[in-house]
Length: 164
Image 1 (cartoon, one colour):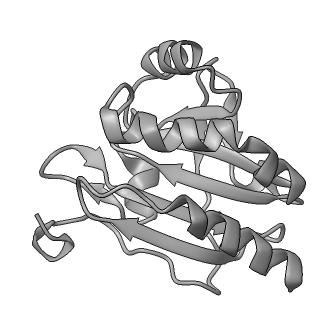
Image 2 (cartoon, helix red, strand yellow; image 1 turned 45 degrees about the vertical axis):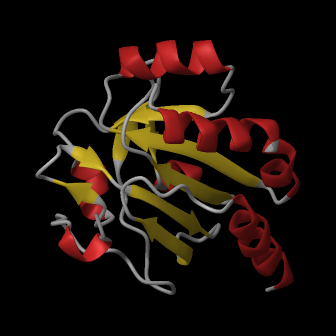
């Protein structure tokens, strides 16, 4: 399936635009907002579902290379339409120490704000948004279903932020 054949809700924010705010709960039920992350670079990693193969591979790669993000003073948050209960079980099983946010209700609201919600399947597409410390989008990638993100792109995007 190509990205052109997928209907999505919302518009993907462009590089240079203010990032849409959101309020979601993490795997522990604690509220997390984008404005609450200001002052640090935020890496928003939208993924379709907890416990799915490609998603697990991508998030484990982030887990195994978390120092790359920490060295860039970046906070990583994973976001899917799963409930906080699923997110907690997933984080515990895979050893994720970063927040997994539940875009469960209203269903896909944050994913819609970022233009990655697929209403036909009820899930978020694979989208990554790197937001600078002042809330401006600095990097965007949205991949079609079944295509993993290239981890090397994170490294390059974070290095680019450090140089600006």
